[in-house]
Image (cartoon, rainbow, N blue to C red):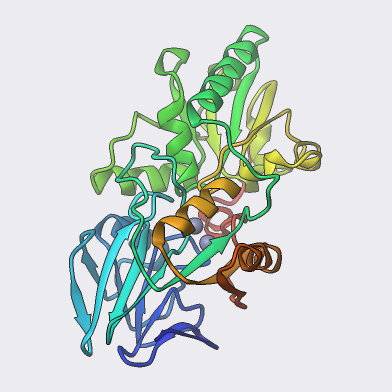
Length: 340
Ligand SMILES: [Zn+2]
Ligand SMILES: [Zn+2]
């Protein structure tokens, strides 16, 4: 029912693509991260909570129709609906039903609810298309509440030493999650331009977020001493950091689970926090779909699909251009390093 075509995941019966990577006439978008939401499609369809980020990133002019979770719609007689993926605000799994066959394309997902929207919803299907960004047994997340506490304790220790705490995470998704996790009694939170732009768009669209102050050239080093700062990973090794006095860098990413990554990223502290499912949750999500066939996209596709086959599932890796959890190009574009 769905095929992996050159431009992306294609439904011939409905004549639409899901998260296509080349321009197509009709695109259903799971979420607004740049490896899923590309420019140039004639028509976009996405969850209503994805609209603000899609317009911010792709332009206000895009032809975009939005639907709510669970709302049924049709393309050429193919029945479609979007369901919560729990990955970032508005992220959706796409359920496709035609002639008694049901496929679900997960996009990116995580199972632990982050409070920004409904939690991941298992959807029964015959074929499940899953990501596998962290599809190795070594990836196992602590409960987010524990990580949030580690982050706030790190900020307190930095402040005691007169250091600013620069916390790095992707501008769409991770930054809002970190922002909501920070203890407001620790002081005002400042944001890099890419994060401020996203913050304002999501706030206007109805997401509940604490106040965020932009980092501007007018701010003095003295004002920024001991401050809390949210920035995208792209600021590392850039002059953007020169405006701060002494600071410590914390990186929040699933990759911090791998030994050596903190050092490679030149971070003072790594926090294992991901918007993707870890190994046990990937397996739990797949089991909950009841799918007999699993197609594995971005990540450890070969290893993960082999493991699933050993468990008796009809699983195979599929080639896609999804990049997994990598730096978003939007972040480097949104604010070039400015002097000061
Ligand atoms: Zn994503
Ligand atoms: Zn992805």
